Image (cartoon, rainbow, N blue to C red; front, side, top):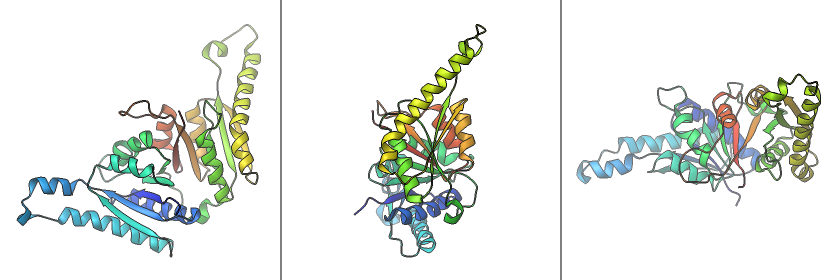
Length: 293
């Protein structure tokens, strides 16, 4: 059986919107949806409370959160196979593990904490930076109905090392499933000394840097485009900072795809400034796809 799509829930409104989005995606991919809630209560409960005085209120709440999310998904997509799981571990560890054996992991952009970006800061960002599989953070305040997204392009930020990019392959596959175009974006800029050069070579330098961007984009698209010849491929080459260019592109797309470098150690986050900015400010869902080392 195909790997399920996994959605992490914590009871927040953002996580429920993620459930809606994940249910639509599971139906689109033809895979089951697996709802996961990570709770440390059982571990604390066993350590603190005697067996004859055990309080199950928090454990029951965790079960209710998962079951409620599953009911919501089934109501949105009748006939969808949905399973639930409540795991007595920290959410980052649980969701990282789930991402490695899923079609993708879906999380909301905010959590139940008081901080505006609580989930993204404490869980979603950590998972996106270190997971072994694609992680999709459901962002954006536009209409979440599938029909509203139909036809919108899938945008991918072209990586610095374009050969065999997993992010580009993921983006083209997603565009194929949606019957939508893929828009590959490559930002370029001249070094500061070129921009201020008064020797008359500034224009020539700009052409050189732009041509390098064109060649890198063509290299990255060649294989994935050949695998999905029916997908319309749009190339967008813009002079400017990648963060600004991609944020602008996110306003009109169904999904923004960014590659993340593989971690070289076990600790810390492994996403760059561009990915960090997209996860916090993009106007659409953001897929972070780990690249091969």
